[in-house]
Image (cartoon, rainbow, N blue to C red; front, side, top):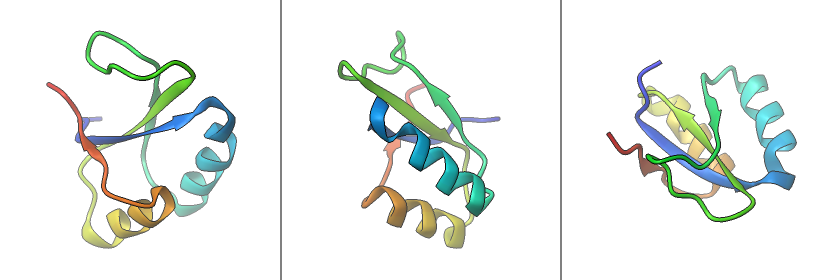
Length: 72
């Protein structure tokens, strides 16, 4: 999967977010902090490929805003 953008969530919100994305049938990966992704303590990133506009709108509503560009 080519990584395009991501959202960060706290560990406690992983379950709800993962289930919602699976129901929406949106492709994603979950990543922990790394050299590429500098995340705050207790956070993980939901990483997405490029999505069509309708699917992205649903993801944007789930996360309450636009995602951050995935660093290359």
